[in-house]
Length: 533
Image (cartoon, rainbow, N blue to C red; front, side, top):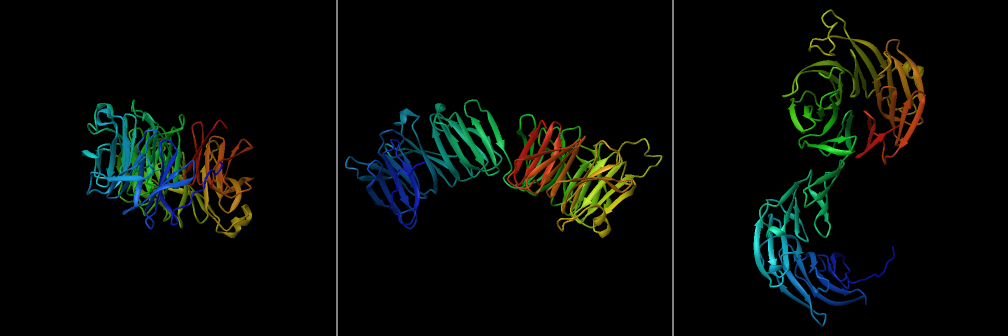
């Protein structure tokens, strides 16, 4: 890229600029301390005309004709039409509108019976004002909503209007001047940037929720490419991929198309953990206010919500029977949940156990429950065998079910630390998952130790120790594969004695999970989907 010209005039900054359609002229306006309008002739690199303004101007638009020497300036309460005469002097005429708080404008040249010079202006009150720019006469005022209009684009036969509302409206001018309510596209957040092609047939809208919407105006097709706008708080994978974020949204992704299928907005609270049903299209989500909600994935319908059961939920695990759920909380409480009915969502719950610190990970297998904490405790419980539950395959028959603690690994004990692991950092946070094939093995990571550990929870012995060359933050297990996310942004997959290494994120890997045909990893607000490894 080469710098062609360096023009200096405004000593206190430039507020807005606009090139003429032919590219020969440039109009610039200084900021609020220097409200001067300057017209430059580009080829000769000189100022040809100036004018002092009474108000700060936020927008300039040239009449969209190749040889046009006319433009309009818009401040919050004043419209002015400008023209360069044959002597290259500025002539002006105030616009025939007053009393509104103006926000944006654009020219439309589609309707020829109105001299092909329509100027369309948006207001803070949600109205569209239409003027004949050639005759400077007011034509119409159309109220489209109770929100400020922040963007107007006129492209061939289409007019696209957006503001501080998730709705983007489009009018086809072949049917008349803003006839009806227009075609509406409901986005997942407020539009922050809009760009359409010259025909207005295709466009892109980006929102403050981190989504990019591809729109075909003629056919009405909408395609969304999206991600979270803030840090991701949880991920769960299976037939679908579900992610939650601090932007108060839950998003469901299709692993086959790698596109978002469902978007769920929960403005009242942030989702801190979630888990997909093993066989049905249901999703369980826990929130920082302690509530638990169930959703139907295909419709994004909330099946039901509990009152706050804990201060803040930190992790969730579905039992293999899919009607038993284990919840962990920041306070160290573990809750057992029995799902009585899915629609409406009806549950019974009880306190399963209470540990001394935040529950960081949970897992279930057959009649076993695993939990680990932020202060280095990893416990395994086994369901107590009775004649009543011998033939029952569910983890929780009722709130009266009993479990025995069969393995307690406490890393706070110096003997345990020196015997099994060497801590390279003073952090005892541990996470783990049951081995899906072995009947006695639990896979564990400790944030302060650069190992992947296999532990026999019946003999209480470490049976395998794998060096990671990095501090582990998260773990997932599926069949014979174990995946670990490291603080140096790498992802390791251990499979049948072989270690595969991946790297794609710009930040530390905070969560990961296997899905049917691959692995999904998250870091900050990034999502990476890995297949065929």
